[in-house]
Length: 241
Image (cartoon, rainbow, N blue to C red; front, top):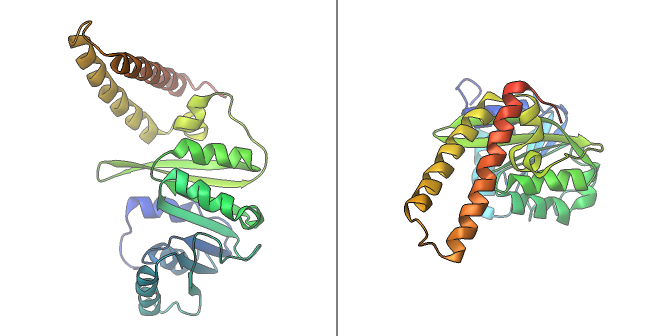
């Protein structure tokens, strides 16, 4: 794997690991992330953790094939429940929804707070992760968005500290991404705006023959459309939070 080109999303994830120590790769699947981190000397070692035995077995095989059994261990674990406080410098979770990520972090909150950094790549409900971080003594020091195969992915790096965003738009779309004028965020927002406009246009064609649920949906979409307009304005004019 060391000699091959890695996918864009994986590259973004490993580039956000900065501790240089032990990484707890929760929900490791095939352990490719752990292997990449150790091969590229971005981590001293890793604990590849998964709730399922079969993926963990495959992970062990890949680790052995990479010749990294001395640096990466596998561990059967429901989330971070089998991780001890201070055992990992970095807690890394990717490929899960935001609700599940926050659940894992909450259920092992003492372990979560003992880490030097959290590197998280939620696939949905990203606002829940950002709210969790700010509500539990973490600040977001870096955030990336990448596009791969037509899908958009966010990677968040957080460290212990205090931080709050002033409005909900920053939690939904990423205060760091907005302030840094992330070009991939701008691309994502333009596509979202087009999608919303298409739905609004379909409502418009229905005239007054809309149900109460449709009217509520239209109102929600209009708010979302205007929120995106405001963010694009801030990106263009570099308005800071």
